[in-house]
Length: 251
Ligand code: ADP
Ligand code: MG
Figure 1 (tube, protein in one colour):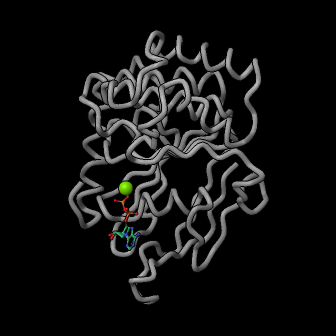
Figure 2 (cartoon, rainbow, N blue to C red):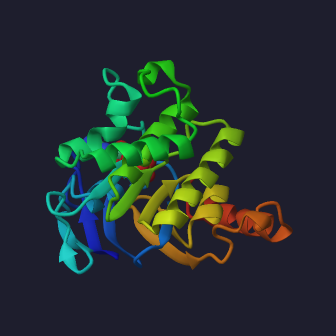
């Protein structure tokens, strides 16, 4: 379980009176997917970095299963906005990277990496370099790396936003398949209303200046492929879009 409590964060160049995040709290139960949505610049990436333990909050705390977040002790799968692949390493090396940093490469890890490559349609690409892959393929490599690590929590920052609409929808299904197998507690930042509705069992809507949690929306449509083209899905999407707009900024 992830609990962020009363987080207030400012970058040093900004004054203490003008924080990026102000009193942000959220809870993600064990095994759930929480989608965080909000206008550009509202502090979504900052929030994710604080939860990952990469930025220390000025106030507040982050607890993983009741203990303060400690990236050295817990496995945190962090997928940054640009995939975070190392250009000078092959696909296989990139996938193994997270485990290598934890000193956890065994024969079983390599077998699991192969299985993930099959599952993600990356077979035959293992010796290529990231520049030799399409955006969708790079995204799959980043997903394989995150899931290979078997993280306690997975934090994904706009993971599918660089992809075209069709590939993005495919990748959402790939993510759901892996998530259903593993039940990884996940926070997914997105600026796509439909992505939040399809993947997030709860949707945390943020507003900007300063970044705050405007509302926490339970979402019964999450993971329901058969509902994706339904009237209800579109109606909820329209409503959420309007609320984001009314929250003061563009989507
Ligand atoms: P989002 O991911 O929602 O678009 P960010 O968390 O990236 O928002 O940024 C929130 C605010 O913090 C923005 O105003 C941005 O300009 C500012 N910001 C982000 N990173 C830094 C940084 N390293 N130093 C100073 N300000 C930053
Ligand atoms: Mg961002």
